[in-house]
Amino acid sequence: MFGMILVEPAEGMPPVDKEFYVMQSELYVNEMEEDEDEYEYDDNAAAKEIPTHVVFNGREGALVERPLKAKQDDKIRLFVGNAGPNLISSFHVIGGIFDRVYRDADLISAPARHLQTVLVPAGGATVVEMDMQVPGSYSMVDHSINRIDKGAVGMIKVKGKPRPDLYDSLEPLVYCPGCKTHQ
Image (cartoon, helix red, strand yellow):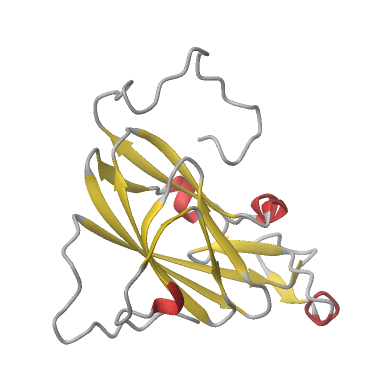
């Protein structure tokens, strides 16, 4: 069992429209032959630090089946933790820029500005803020990209009117069969 504890500054944090919690963790398990819904801990995989699963919010698909939802022009804040126990996360939102990043969840110091990927150590956290100006589906990933196939992917769905002044494509939208990042 794991979670995050938030200790806000006495004066609070700047207001945002929505706040979300995302926790990355890795699992070192083998499926039980009798029941594919049961797993047993794999000492060998753990000792080699080769997880069988790397997931957001406790299980593969948790933030794909139930994506985070926002409206166009919402300012969102993500509290991102990494339960580990071993790997560093390279947290990234495909198509987004973090307007403010509170590295190591340091809510007292001035935030970093306009980053695209942020490192989250095992046992650590970060806080990121984004202005959602363009509607669409944004994939949250660990940019150690092969971890997507182990489950480290989630979605932010933003509703609103198209903004061709900010983003437009001449090509029609095409979904890749079996792709976990384009939902």
